[in-house]
Image (tube, rainbow, N blue to C red; front, side, top):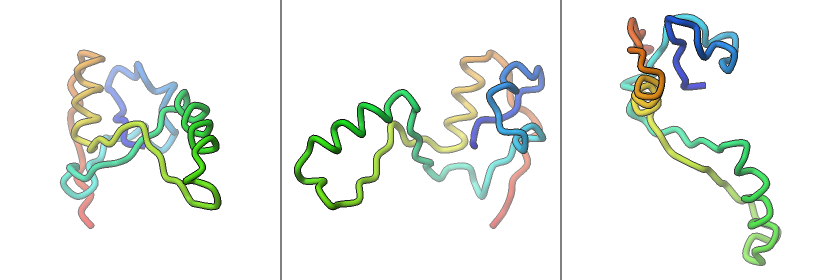
Length: 91
């Protein structure tokens, strides 16, 4: 939910409908968010099941940890578009 809308609309197909307005940073935008790529779910699940230490345990997994600012920077780098008019939502 941290991927910003681009002015060109190039990635709108991949965004949840409520993300199509102005991009938002929550607080400073520096807090890390953990992310799991759908392609990693099967591999991680297999490793968890195979590992005897996880029997009857809760296991928390992630593929990457990025802040909103890092995610925005990646989107800008890959798309070649600048994300502008960011709203800051303060707690």
